[in-house]
Image (cartoon, rainbow, N blue to C red):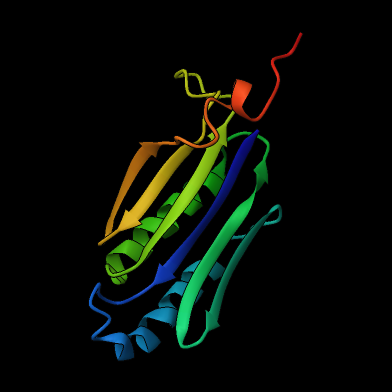
Length: 133
């Protein structure tokens, strides 16, 4: 199973000085979201107090097209709104590279998406789950 939970605060620049340009960027993100035919997860773009934010989350049977689309969306937002920042936590319990017992964290900051190890919930066994006996 593939589990993912994430968010992005959308900003044009890190200085917030050009936020009026945000109104031109948000429709591009909305259009990108409509390209995805999700049936099993959360994907929402919202506004509050003049700020925009994205939420994603869900579970899929294995790392599939939705997982690829999430990464693509994070990269896209980083490209068109490089002041955006956020996190994406994911866990693939079928990972064949020894990462099946941990969460991975993608960090979006200043237009760059970097992967890091999770220090809070990993290793999943024994931090959040018991070993099967």
